[in-house]
Length: 113
Length: 112
Image (cartoon, rainbow over all chains, first blue to last red; front, side, top):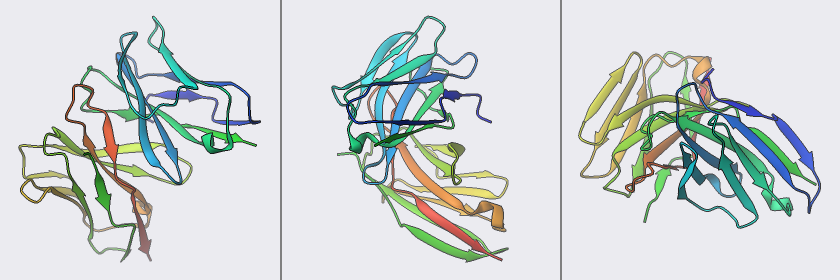
């Protein structure tokens, strides 16, 4: 158990819908990273937050957004969902801004029908 | 650009050593990592090596880094059936985020 929690574990929804994925980092970790794992793209970095502020962006679609709250939990919002958004979404946390040790949560499996 | 490559599959007999290889392109990476993913599970950080080191040993795991060739390997001694999983090599980006750039993963199958 890495200490990072993600909810829900599974999510099934329809195209065009909007969902919110939640991540709670390890106690004391200020940095949260979101990654997407899909069959065709592999594991890709989406976005990073540190102590409530966005710090880095990767291959994140405009339909996706995220935030980190004062209690340091983070949410990833996915809207206007398409079939191709079906994937495993992981969050990872680290103590520092430059997270040399990133600990991953169990992931949320999103299925868009 | 940033790219990490791994072979897709490795099969070994229980008790043998496994060696999983990886090449990367970003010479400014500060850290290089090995993660393990079991079916239906998240990514478990196995070990990582700082870019100015050549080798790191942690119990049954040995990481070798050849900076000149940008080659990283993970050796698992006395491989067990519980080691069957997908192993991902990753490099930290050279920018300030330290985001991870992953390879496509090597599926390790340990035969009894």
